[in-house]
Every structure is written in structure tokens, then in C-alpha cells.
Length: 299
Image (tube, rainbow, N blue to C red; front, side):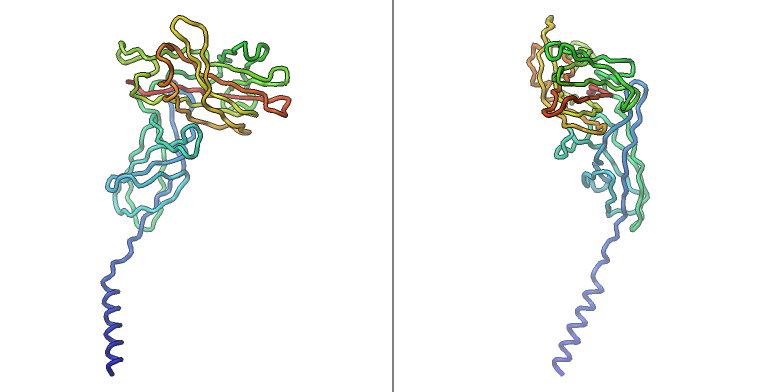
């Protein structure tokens, strides 16, 4: 009889405990596909490579970085304000996800229902404070300058064949011309703190400086900078990024900030530098680049 009483008491406790347990909350789901970027006629191509979304809720703060496309749960219900920041892989490296500082964040209010999936249309544009220090799409012809000491007879042309948009710059290496270095034709000056707003590359700090570009290459493509001292035409060249071959067009966001800030203070003007060597074992290799942009924010 005592055993039966104990069993009944234990079962009663379990039932009472079960009644007091709160129900597991049911999340709503967010689906993010890809960002649509819009540009005006002065900002170059709208083609982008936004790989990530940095996601926050107004009530909860930052929740995470999501590689697009992505569906994920959120424990929220009813009208909810969310903030979505476009993210990139800086220098094309998967281990360096960053918020791209030149795109607008997106704020959206959604009426969330537990258990349902809510599709968010992502869109962004360049911030109004962005300065495009250099823009080149090669649709008007080639503007790259060849350094003759690296390939006296090589040539750079523009082509619509296999171009990303319109025309792209093209150079071909072969056994007679196995090396080349070319630079953007525009000289980008060091910032002048005596002007307001400050003109030129902001090397006093205060803004990141990036190069955007599309490329397709049959050999390693090097990217760097050319610097010139005041009153001098002697180029000081330095490479700092090597882009592995890509059989299809790829977009990359290259952070120039540290490289420019580390340059000698007597360098007054800069160009973007590209270089390539004929890969070992190949008799020829083609390289195409397009949609070059050097940008920073107004200081």
C-alpha cells in the first residue's frame, strides 16, 4: 500500500511539473536572397558582389552575419524593425568578411508571424558622401599606360568579345612578351588639408579607401600602386595583391587604405598598378579587367 501511495505521489508531481512548464517559443523565419544595387550615371556599374548580410533587430541588437542567400529563425513577433548592412569579402578572402562602408544600410519593418517565412527584398546604393576618385569602364577605349621597361612591344586594347559589360581592357602575354605592367592613366593626388572639403586621397585618415574591379585572367594578376614624388615622373611601383586565375568574371573589393597610409609622405600622386607574367608551361595567357573604381568618403 505504501509503494502504491509513493508511486501516485511521484506521478502527481510529474504532472504538476509538466503543467508549469512554459511552451517552447515558435520563431518566425527571415529569408534573405541577394542585394539589388542601384547607381546613378556618375557612379559606374551597378554590378556588385555583396556576399553577406549583417543583421540586427532594433529590440535585440546585432544577431549575426549571414552568407547570402540565407533563411534563419528570429524570436520576435508582430511589427519588428530590422537593420541589414551589406557585407563583402575584403580582398576576396573568405576569412575577412566586412561591412562595406560605402553602401547604405537597409532599415525595414516587418510584421512577423511565428512559424512563417518572411522574404525581405534587399536593396542598397552608394552613400551620398562617397567620392569616386577614379572611374573607368573602358567603353571609350583603353586608358591604361604600359611601362615600357616591362614589355616594350606588348599592347593593351579594349574588346567587347567576352567583356563583362560593354568593353573591357585586354592584354595578352606570349613567349615573346612574357611580362607586363600597366597603370591607370589618372594621377590621384594626396589629400590637401587646406581645401574644404578636403580634396584628393584622404591620407590623413578618416576614411577607408577601396578599389573595386572586375577581372578574368588566365594567369596570376598582380595589383598594386604607383607613386610619384612632387615634380618627378619616375614611378615607384609596389604590388601587394595577387589574384589567382579565374575562368569567369569575378568582382573584388580591395582595401587600399593601409597600403596608401604606409607610403612615404613625399609621394604626392598615385596610380593603380596591374602586372602579370606568362605562367610557366603556357605559350599565351589573356587578362581582362573592367569597371575600375577608387572610392572613399568625403572628409
